[in-house]
Length: 195
Image (cartoon, rainbow, N blue to C red; front, side, top):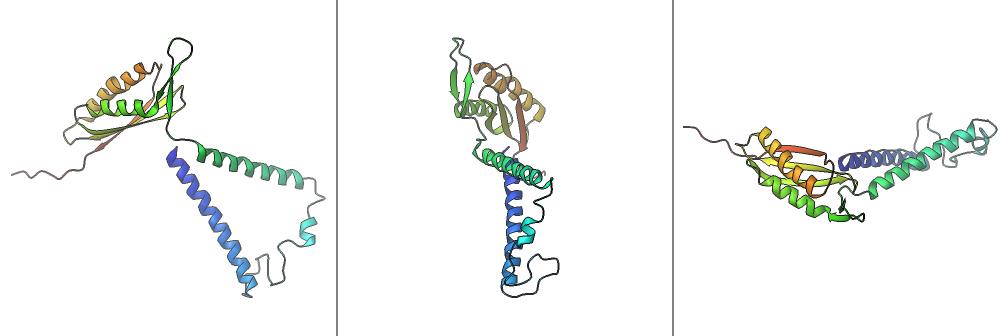
């Protein structure tokens, strides 16, 4: 979600910046007396943004106010969605574990991520492993990144992580399932010289 959130932020900021630059630059150009295209809404220093006739033009139409209210409602919902997306954490701070007594227990997300990464890093052919937990406290999801050695067999390493580290994390947290996304990347190394 983090990647999507940063993309949405960049697009929204770029659109807002473009609108502000065009409108502000046009208003500044008109105020300084520069010539503007004929389609530009302001054409003189004493021109106003909305004249009295423009402000009252659509007031008597039946569709005007419902359209204005609908557009403003959509803008408010989009703004709230964007704000909540900014406040939402990408990683889980804790995982809720059923302790069997009806109360439940919480396991720190970083602790579970650390154990998952350590165990995945011990698999043959894995140079380094990183783990992150996302989703909800009651239904976490794992993202594991493996940095593979040049001699590693990806299929065997992936099966070892799925049957080992991910299975142990799922069982120790008492989860019915632990969906996981595992990404493999090769270690950059120099080519060996063959003589």
